[in-house]
Figure 1 (cartoon, rainbow over the protein chains, first blue to last red):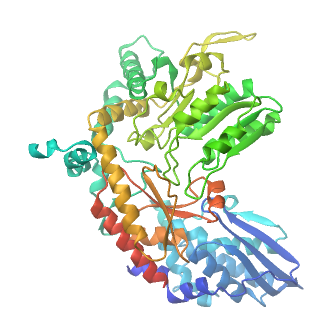
Figure 2 (cartoon, each protein chain N blue to C red; figure 1 turned 30 degrees about the vertical axis):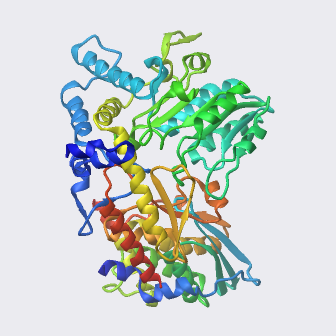
Amino acid sequence: MSELSELYQQVILDHNKKPRNFKKLETANRHADGLNPLCGDQLTVYMQLEDERIADVSFEGSGCAISKASASMMTQSVKGKTREEVETLFSEFHRMVTGELDEEATPNNLGRLTIFAGVREFPARVKCASLSWHTLHAALSGEDTTTTENLGPDITSDQVSA
Amino acid sequence: MSGEKQGGGAAESLATWDVARVRADFPVLGQTVNGKPLVYLDNAASSQVPQVVIDRGSRYLREEHSNIHRGVHYLSQRATTAYEGAREKVRRFINARESRECIFVRGCTEGINLVMHGYGRKFVSEGDEIIVSAMEHHANIVPWQMLCEERGARLRVIPMNDAGELLLDEYDALLNERTKLVCVMHVSNALGTINPVKEIVARAHKQGVPVLVDGAQGAPHLPIDVQDLDADFYIISGHKMFAPTGSGVVYGKAELLERMNPFLGGGDMIRTVTFEKTTYAGLPNKFEAGTPAIASQIGLGAAIDYLNGLDRAAAHAYEHDLLAYATEKLSEIEGVRIIGTAREKVGALSFIIKDVHPHDVGTILDQEGIAIRAGHHCAQPLMKRFDVPATARASFSFYNTKEEIDTLASAVQKVIEVFS
């Protein structure tokens, strides 16, 4: 059960139960819908972008504990950050959950988000953790929708070698 | 144990069902997953393959492989004989009048699309109506929706009650002179409901409307007699009835198949080809363009042989008992809600756990070695009907055991503990 308790850590369960910034953002000037058609997870990310900085951000939607907690913690992490900082974080997060980035060996900006490193042991769940990030990225890029099928497979390095 | 044979009906069948012996026929079941014995409860998605089917497929590949219907040479004739032999086995299995009424396809999805293109595009035009049911799999919704969009036709939906049973009075009200086809599933993959397809067919035929039955979940569990059902089309996926993927059947009444357009164009489905005009082959070749999945279809024939070697009445009684046991065990757990409580059910048990998303259920169960399906089961309109985003689904076969269901129940308890 060690991998499992790694995946469902208390912090993740807590964010699932009480997601932060879980609302429609009235001051938003950007938003995007994210959909994972394979499992039906769907969420909307709202963003108030001012001078290339995320002044405020929120999300709404339904999904599993991993996707909800990931979205919740993402909103906390990116609030106040510049577009450039967010893109770096997105890249690091994505590489961590697909097993390309060893968050312990390589310096990074992930901070508390390293709690999602356990997801890479569950290849079927990688997209649950990354859906909100892809949606945030779409909102930043001025797109209004994204679906995980357009993203190519979130394949972990284990899967490639298998 | 001859004394037990004095009992009658289901009780006798239960007593004579030797599940340990049957399990030994399926090599995949013997493995461990995440350090636990595999508990395979995802049979509605794809069933496992018995050794005799694996052996038959590999014997074909080792000794008989060649293209069918082409060569005069020895191997081609052997391959053709085996392939056509499988078709005859299918004919007997579903009691079709003639083997040419059994078209080999890759599975139900391809089969339904074949009927959509061959029958629908020929006979459905603007203002016509096609009836489906509220519980259909996307494979029996989307092709008809595509046809309706193309033709300006209308898709009508038979509603159901909260138990997951179709409302036949509402169905009667939908049937009218514009109805061109009724498309219903025999057994629901998401709910386990057994639909009264014989009655559905009879009511449609009163109005002269043909009926397509999606038999993906029917064929693995129920005896199929297409003449008794009087279905105009009955569609089967081999991989849900112990055969390899890539095997499947469209049964169609010969007179309908004759009048239909071909599906795919290409080799094997023609009589003569010139650049001016092509004439088509007779049944079943008219619908079998290109080289088919020969090994898989031969495997389907072997799976039918395997099923015929079992006491299917006993298997059915055993599955019925398993589902009842699973329903009872899961219902006892606080926070579990069963989705689909029809009086007539087989195979599948959908459930949700309060405040836990089915994907999280699936991942935790997987850690216990239990394979279930979590998601919308390719039936999004059905999920919406029950106002749930998804369900967890355990689906059973005659090789599952009550001990496995106990394992499932305690793993569900564990899920509740993790999320409490």
